[in-house]
Image (cartoon, rainbow, N blue to C red):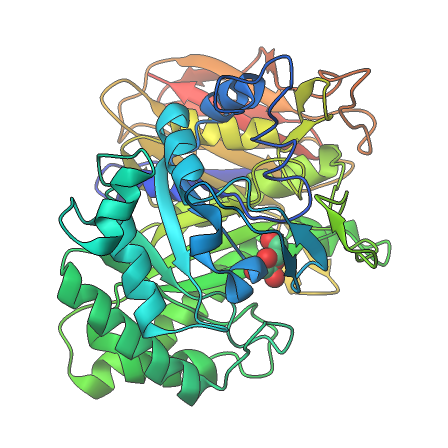
Length: 490
Ligand code: AHR
């Protein structure tokens, strides 16, 4: 297989927003309890935060963390998670018992320790404008009011300063607690956003888009809710999960391109509303749930922190996640924030055992590399690539690639989607005046189903390969079959 593209600084998508490397912590399964928080664990700090997980979170390079849900938020009373009295409640979304031992104050402290920006969701399922404003007052107002003084009484003198707020979660989904029609949600979101902005005009607000690209109401939903709340919001959300199924890895591996199509459809819809309203502002996109997700059995017993959605990822999943990251970077002129769902244990790059170790799943690695090297300007890359037919999306290019450029280096992220063939990649680097390949790291394996486990936590990880070189302004590299590649040029 042969593929090629040209890198030229004249063709730039723009400065990438570091919020693209966000993650998500929901009160779901063991994401919070025995994930980020486990008092009594040998590695827990004084507040019960697992320091092994904090270290891995920093290594992962996560920039923002969305909290506390997800479906959970649509039945959540934030007051249950603050102060000394923590009532246990039923969580209808995941049929679990929520102890509320961990809440907003703990999350804000954990986020500071992890060095991440908190991104908060308000409940627009069972609650509304008043409760959202109360939460905002408790979280962000310095003091001198009932709720800000309550926060101070609870031990947090400084406000949390949360800038980014999600106006509910997946309100189009019939499974959502307090599910609404587009007209109902559009009106409630507009009123909530308006009231929150009266308290703080500088908030960044995210309107719920569709739960996924395949929803029967997709696009009509976006159009209606944007029509209602356009002036009050900054972002519209996108959610997408992919998996290998029906013995069809080709469709799965094209997920990164499917994500790009999804983005383009939302951009088209948002800009159509903009045109109709003769608005100047453009709505940006927050891809605030994305990942590989293999559906498993639900939870039928009302347990605390049940083991649900604990997917173990393999090499193929890691390459697909790499391609999804490439898709987000390629669309980063409009996708200005994204959250991989989720951070720990629940469809996550980090896995833990209660009382035991924490380790990196295969999908940890492409995320960590993209977050580490994803600084600067994203260059427009137009690959000339062989294609393969997929059942799900028709023809898909076998090469998926992007490049990021800053003062230190240019980094190319590339995925070879062929399961069997190596790919010779040629890049015209005359425009960026790159003289040498600093390194070429690869994530690939003879066994595409290989995983990382407690016993073998580093079975799958990136390794360096030789052979890539620049000659006469042309870079040549070989991308192994089914591989995620990171090439540094200087
Ligand atoms: O991330 C898991 C769940 O997926 C979230 O709670 C929900 O928003 C989505 O359907």
